Length: 211
Image (tube, rainbow, N blue to C red; front, side, top):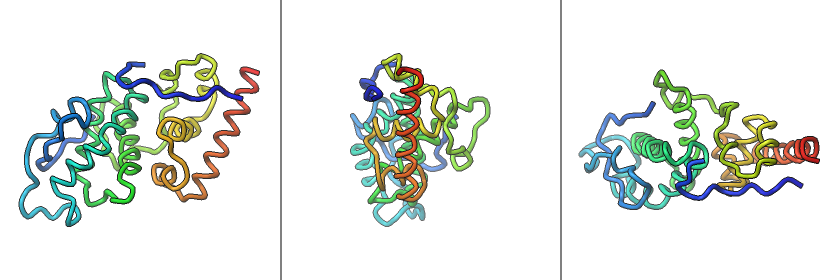
């Protein structure tokens, strides 16, 4: 059986979306340095964006509750040096698109957005709107380098980017079922099948490459 995937310790090392309206201040301690990308300001009066309760107080609670998890997600995939700025970018998108953030699945929405922002970041050289970033992660996935066990890295590198994405979401973020489906943007049945296939291919690759 393959070795268990383990999370990278917080802060260990292994173009952005700018707001077109003021972003509320990020609470202290939500995620390192994310406040630098979020100017302190109340939500603009009369703003038509967002649901009736998606105001500055809602945003601050969102960041306080889920900011650390988003930061960990990005540390594991981009390294500590870039994760802070990328976390801030995700939170800016969350404020700009607050009407789209589902209250019952806010963290899954943030993880999915973080995946888009990370893909955008990897395609440096020309800014790409978040809505146009492809779902598929890059083949040269830095998350593989974040895994400490050399044999596990070898096996993961042999898998498809999609399989790695699914396995990391399951092993690192603990996502399965409906939560995994929301992050992947597919139905529950499709997510269950995709996770099962990814696990099977991981086992097969382990047997072939490691024995």
